[in-house]
Image (cartoon, rainbow, N blue to C red; front, side, top):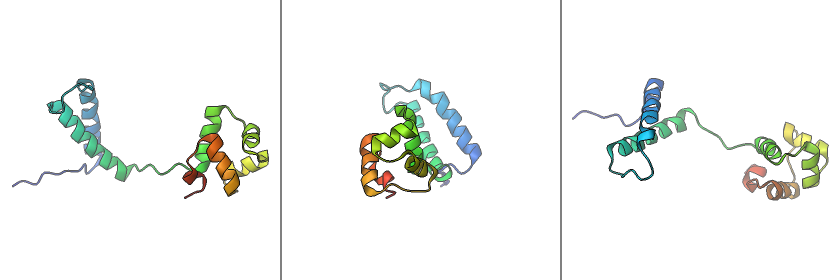
Length: 125
């Protein structure tokens, strides 16, 4: 019996799979039956691509610095406005954003609450 490979082994295979997924996407909709050949192929290729990407393009947890910058942008906050919102000095915000300092537990709670950031990320857990 011939062995059938169940993983994407290289970038050429990955690129082919991504191209095929692009071809299949317009053919599969929410109401497409699960037993439709295109739906099955799309599901299987998507799983293979996800496994390949998990190994070759891992996405780590976001850092507190990244999330602070993102929330500041989303909320239209300057460093001074953020400092006022969480009750610290603007220079302290600068220290957080540069990685020179980490928030205390009390400040971490305010950051988590005011900016809606997961407490585990704020505390580096």
